[in-house]
Image (cartoon, rainbow, N blue to C red):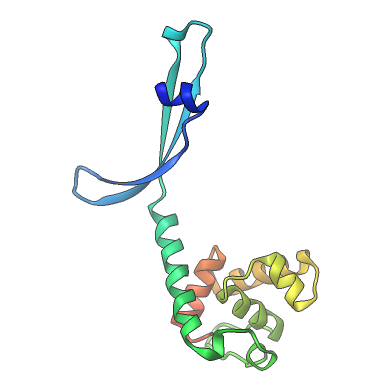
Length: 153
């Protein structure tokens, strides 16, 4: 309560905790101040959210970006690199989808991809969704991971 009174709010934070089974997990803790006219009735509510998967995914992307940045052929997305056909049994991506997938692997957002490929944001998002459907994954991170494991990049 002292922190809330002096700062006006309590900043959220991340921390690692151990569960009863000894496994460590990442938590995001948000603090909500419940004000009251009576200072004795003020309260702080702490909301704990398990963000272990998010943190692990973020670390994977950072490792992938570091890995790709060490290979000179991945430092920029060249026209030649974008047009290399990928051949994977059961997966048939169009040339444009291959370009979008490689851009995702470089950490680009849909907005950046749209600008880079000179297409609309809606079109970039459609390409991303088509890639997710064809690869049978649910996120761009999963698509990049899948593509990396199966030699699509």
